[in-house]
Length: 414
Image 1: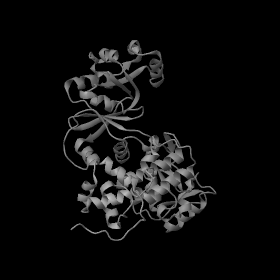
Image 2: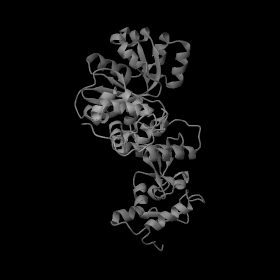
Image 3: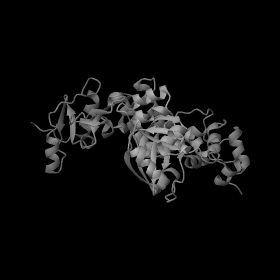
Image 4: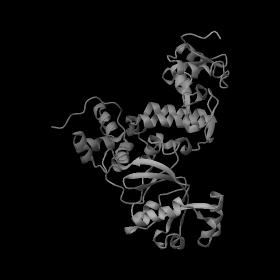
């Protein structure tokens, strides 16, 4: 006997996003009914809007798909999600395991190629574009085959400029680069690798060292910590790519946020909406990094470096934390929508010291609290005492006052 449905959470409507998720996972009503121990007729009733979905089954559906009930029950397929805030960047997985691939990797990825040397294989427009992309005249190139039944070519066609490539060999993704330019040229393939088969060509930025074991990748992407290797070139879908980009910080995620033509308040409203409706694939770590990415985008725009508000040293923005002056869990909705509630602190100690209340701001200067419990920590924090805080303004005074009173134990007299 199938489980009976009990309390109804939502009024009847056609849950198009549930139907969409079932299609993504290649599930029929019978498949989902078997997973949930309900009849296929019940599932068809949900999909048509004739029947409501009970709270019990909604909770199970949330776990199955990693999406919120509000999303699954939406009558429109459009629903604001974390993915909607990011550009369409994807990750390409490029094996380089055989001897030919290792030789080609050394020739055109480790060693640069002079643009002038490949000019005969480029049209004038492509040549000019590459000169702008590589002002020093040195470029880095890779190419892939069409593959059986054009399988590899279809993967290649998913690529766009600014996508990320992870190079793989012997159980390890060992380097990464960004795609800078794409072209198809049998002649260029012949010139570079003495074989026209690698005609689907992508140019990349200079490769950087990377270290991701295939077991960790498989667990993160597929939920299975197994050592099955990467067998061929392929491109992850957008959502899987975003999981990796955020969860493993392959690149700083604020640089792949959409360049939304909206105010800071609108962007913060998107963040608040995400907090209330769903977390990114139920991944708390990724959700936290998403929040930091949005706030860094607001604070720094497209700057790549900025100064810590406390120690005043310059850092790449990925090393700066958008610290909440008033803790977010104590902030009202209006305060969460105020970009002035955060300021930049470095991850080399200043953020931790402020978060724990070892330092606070009063009358526009940092003050040392009597909470440090070792001589070494006290000596470090002493350097910040009475230093100016340039983020102390009419818009932040109340937030800094809250922080002081929340943490204050004793204010030094000097």
